[in-house]
Image (cartoon, rainbow, N blue to C red; front, side, top):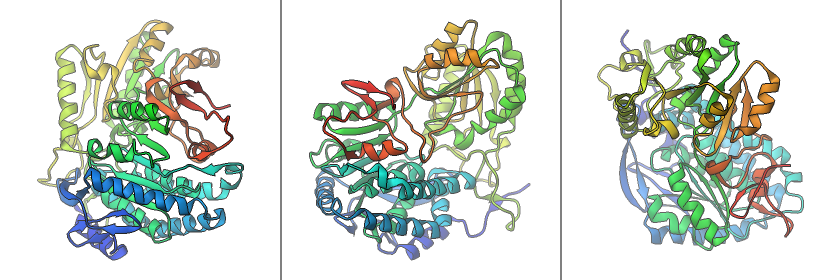
Length: 512
């Protein structure tokens, strides 16, 4: 079967639609930065390409440190005005921005496909979760703000590339709803056009948004440690997160730092294998490129044969490929579990880690091939990595203790409950975990010993939406927890004696 690009979905089609939808933010040859309430043609352009097939995309306009600090100073001026805008007006403006994003839902989704490689279904879900989640806050915000005031300065957002809408834009709009000006750094690895369009639609409604691009090392003094910043919200890896954590802790600055952890799924005295098979395929959504992915299965040794019989059909059914490739121009876009990884460098890194682990003794249980994917004839496939499953990665391999952030599963066999818990807690804290066991009493006894913020019984846990809280144990989280009223409380000031739930340098407090 020869595939072709779905008509009307090419990058240039999306780009022309951006020029029409937001000409103030998109020029024919570049994307602009937004600061001081104006779209500005500044910054050195860094060429970028799509992970989907190597198509050249809009270049990233990287600011220098001096200009970034000017943007932060301008955001503080906006903040001092916005914090006094009545809540009813803030709600009206945020609602109008959501209406505009709903009108451009399809374009925002298409941009996510090209810029970060999300399949169509997952790209639409990312946009919808952002819009629906903020609409929930519009309805619920009044009591959440009772007795609270905006922060002294704007909220600075530095987020990874994988969820530009449902994590980053969602957070920005709630922060603005709570009375703060907001600053966001465009992720270097992808999401520029999608974020720019979303911010353009919000800025038209008078929301105090700043959107800048640049390297983290060059902009950190402005976006993290500048005295104008009221709070730092970070989503990303532990290395970068650790540097941010050290900086904000020294300054006593409000912070929300969501970091990675090796989320594990334990199997102990379990027999419902058909149910497990259903869940396993879903764990491959977006190639496990998300903070709540499950790349580690810790399995009771005597159940290993039954586990494999449930696991292998699931991993073999995973569908990956070019998100916009169809057999007939009239066909709907394909239902895929994932497309490419974020870039060719990441795919090569994981390929090397897999080869190294096998060379040191890991057993390959499954290795897909590019021939299994839905790909266009002759397309660039350098960012694609088929699913891989390894048994018992050696302790010397990074795959033994770190999150791969790609479609690579590792399986560890254990013989005792103590070994189960040790293996599930290998990364010193995680965001989510699951324990599959038939006995509720066993789950109730073991789950509290798993160092994850959320632990599921026989089913996966997710970041959550709306009223559901989110955080992490150990090194997977620093600062205030979020979700529901905690997100609003994290970006506002309450009583002088308030202790926010979270992991702080001087205390750890779980939500009551």
